[in-house]
Image: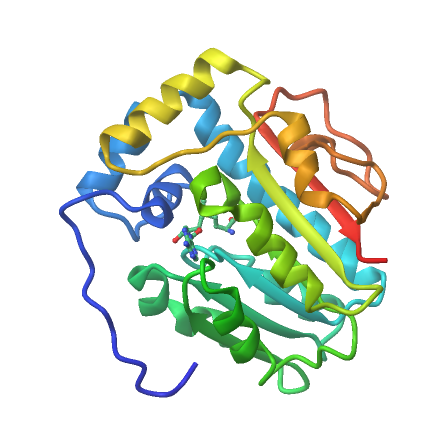
Length: 261
Ligand SMILES: C[S@@+](CC[C@H](N)C(=O)[O-])C[C@H]1O[C@@H](n2cnc3c(N)ncnc32)[C@H](O)[C@@H]1O
């Protein structure tokens, strides 16, 4: 992040997805407009937010354990401990992490994402995922793209309806990564509990936020040509590696980690 990055104004007249998510997680960096949406969402949305966050923790720890020491996280959200770099650097202090989000409130709180170990590095890019080239150019200043990178877009795809062509965006990003890199995605499901999904979509819609829940097959499309690792494309609580699976828990969040061949 360039020192002195101008702080864009925070619009409190309408809800923003980062702040609604913060409200769902019990955070304090949101406004009454955001809280009003969060309150109207079905209970599954709150559970999904926690499940999604817990998946991020486990997937990052797994990747770090596999020797991945470079991370590019797009749609980072308002800092929520532990943040991705804290997990990665807790395992390998030399880990380098670039965060990116387009919401001014995330930029305002980005300092919390920039407290790195001395051996590693963290950076924050204020940019829109709709401009993947800009993000890659900025990330190259901190990450070495000749070595594997774990690219994560968590809880972001369902804010990118199909007319924005999110598959092409993900493809542009993964095409920039060398073999042995990883793609980590999570996405709200439209076919786990369709009624609740429609309710959630309607509530976000009232606040002007377009929600694009997807079926399992639609989510699988983001991984075309990549090698999904065990335990496969599953719901967030089911994504476990060495730790035992929790009691079966209903979840409307699909997740997967894939290796770039
Ligand atoms: C639900 S939060 C997920 C936060 C975090 N990744 C997690 O999984 O805990 C979605 C984030 O995506 C960001 N976002 C939405 N649209 C975006 C866009 N077009 N470009 C970059 N970030 C975006 C929002 O600002 C928000 O912080």
